[in-house]
Length: 543
Image (cartoon, rainbow, N blue to C red):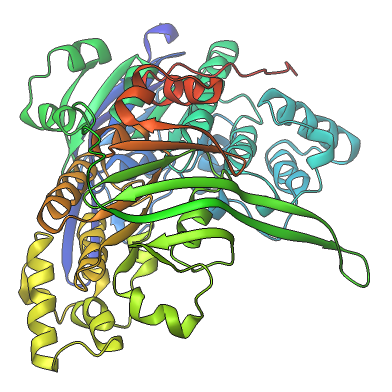
């Protein structure tokens, strides 16, 4: 009889939040089952209720502001909704583990890795001393953390994004839970690291026999994981079933919309006849490594090492590579925002030796859009002030004319000009990124560096931003340097591509050529991880 009881059974679950005098329904009558060893993905855009549903399982919502007007959550037949805190403490971390989206904010920046993994073992298992240290090392080896012994004393900021996520997984698997809840565990990672983490999770799932509740907005990841899927929209499950059935023949319009939003289509054809806007020859950005009492330079970090490129009007050059490959540093060097060596030419004029004062008149023609639209927009300024700041700095127009120009720029990016007096927190992530783009184009620039402008956005919003960038480029003949680790977006937008690793260009050429017939093994590895989601082989040492 016990075998007929599901491992996890969620029935008619609803969640609502008290916001002032209002009640917001975040989850509406959600039901699903999860069996031993099974994978269930909750997929949907931001605000669809995925994470709230998962947090409800562990009763981690901010009660009593959050409440469950309807529903039941049973783990091995025992009710979790309203369960005493003492009961939940025996389940959290022991029987149900959780991996959160951003490991840098989930890990304590003041404690080393040994202390943080060991804390889980001490609180939930009572391990201390040598036994605790031995188990910490076993877990770090289990998740494939390289040089685990040497990294015990490392702080989170001393690890890469993929290494931090492995530590989070080690903490979640400390007591070999029956269920692992993974909340967007790969969103902030490079494509090759993403593939490694997915391979690691599926390998551990098979070896430990655990079930996995996987939360994501990336349909490609859901295909890679297989199992079953629940598609969520506005707090409700609109479609569910086996992944191959749902993706092979979707029945709900929203599922079809998500699938249609994937970046697709052939790359643009590279036109070599257009006038050159920006170029660089043998560009280098080396950061000195200084040691000793007198801070003697003992070496250099070669962030950009001998890069040569050319970009014409109306063209997009995609710069791809993993974190630390030098992509962003290259963009900043071209904008003269970081010191560099080598020739930089803008519209035929050498600018690499110009002073800050001499560069100022050119700044309005060279703009940048950053990765995180919320972090790059001042929360204290209105939208009108943010978008119009460049006009004021360069003394362009009267206040009334600047306000009209701001309204026109907002209209160009698909926003109502009447939002000028509102503030960034009042807008969604996609709307904030449109505002950041409006701030860049209001000065009518000729060259824009786009630094991961879609990586933090939902897939359908990504598609909207890509379409917007194309439309603006066609209208104003803008030259884009598009920095990204998402090769699907690069393929849809870029005429040519530059593949970087460790500051060096490994491959470059027309996008169609590089994507169809890559020459360098590193490029082939990137394409395999990004476009086919073939997991990079991960070496995992058993405990």
